[in-house]
Length: 56
Image (tube, rainbow, N blue to C red; front, side):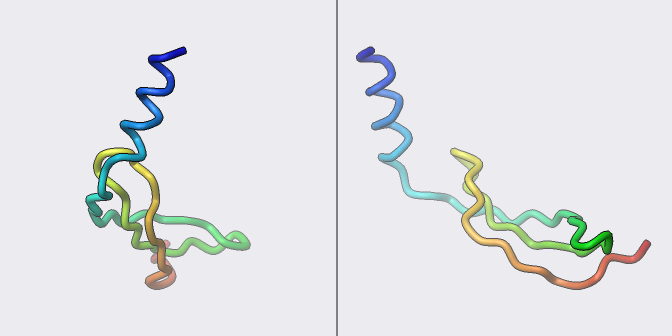
């Protein structure tokens, strides 16, 4: 039980270090290129924005 609490505190006690990744997502069957800012430590998506329609 103490180990779980320690892990939870460790996860919360960091500042997110954003890295930018580019992915392709589909919306209504149409592929779009998406830019994601992801924390390099916990892999949480911090920000996401649609760039353009992806070429097929």
